[in-house]
Image (cartoon, rainbow, N blue to C red; front, side, top):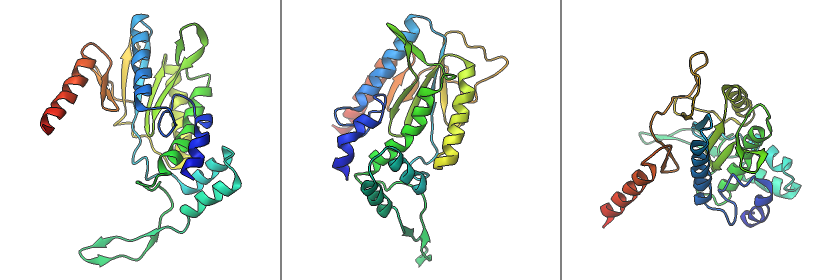
Length: 245
């Protein structure tokens, strides 16, 4: 099943999602974020970078929703049925002070450590990304040479980084996240999400619902957002290597 998904997932998910896609790596998405921030800074574009934090992302995915996603992407009835078998009639128990509880059913979550789990989660989160990309009310960063194309998303598994250029983009973004959560079981942790603002952004009348980061922001272990970001990232890496020597 893993090999079958790998053969087609690159045709299903957008290039701005690099997890589980053959030929893609996390460095690709980090480069996209870096280059977009540099483009914003060089041209003094008024924009916001939003890093969404998903509460217990892997544990909250509805099995019923995941089954519908597999069918919706046209992976075939046989494959969808195999996926359904893997996540049907799952039970668990909890041991407390030597006492084991009665088994209870598990209706959500992807199995961590299971080879197919990353691909399944990527397919699920792709629906949220599709909504953001196709929504004309969410305005991203226009790409050089083609104003019709915009950079809105940068994803790696459950790490979702978004770019928008005005406050009006935030409202449909939040609405989309809520609707996605109702369908899939996902939940955006607003308090742990963060935003980094570039250029002039009027926060007087309508403040962003996310904590505003005045300094650098850390995405996938790398610092972004201003002078010294690269140096800080490398210093942390060198320090970790020295600890192991």
